[in-house]
Length: 115
Image 1 (cartoon, helix red, strand yellow):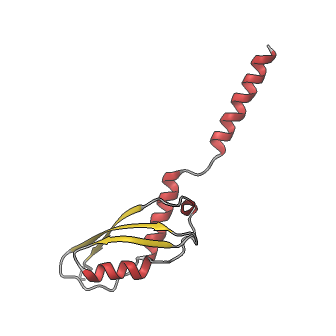
Image 2 (spheres, rainbow, N blue to C red):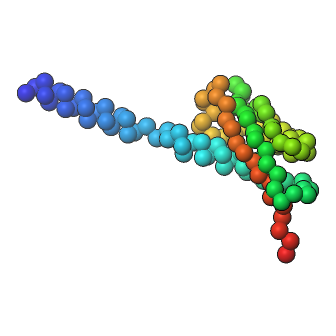
Image 3 (spheres, helix red, strand yellow):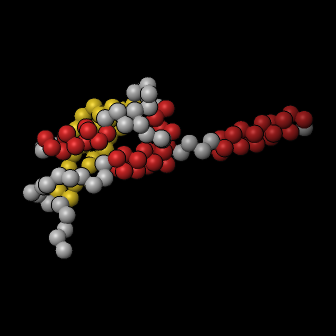
């Protein structure tokens, strides 16, 4: 009976510890995405098409700064815009603790609608 009680206490403590961890990776990645999106707000780019897109790959250095690895876009101005807005900018996200991880985002710049 004593072994059963000890086992039950161990299971309850283990379950509490598992649920106490609040580092939901989906939530942290969404937070990171929102912070990167705020850095890329309001581009002053004149575009001819309805929409331009760019695939961005980045990681973090030891100082917690974004290091842009790749910007894949057909327009050079979009590449320069992303690099100047993101490269070596600090982010306040907890996800930056995962070093050596490459993050990927797709940026879409839409032509403003005329009123």
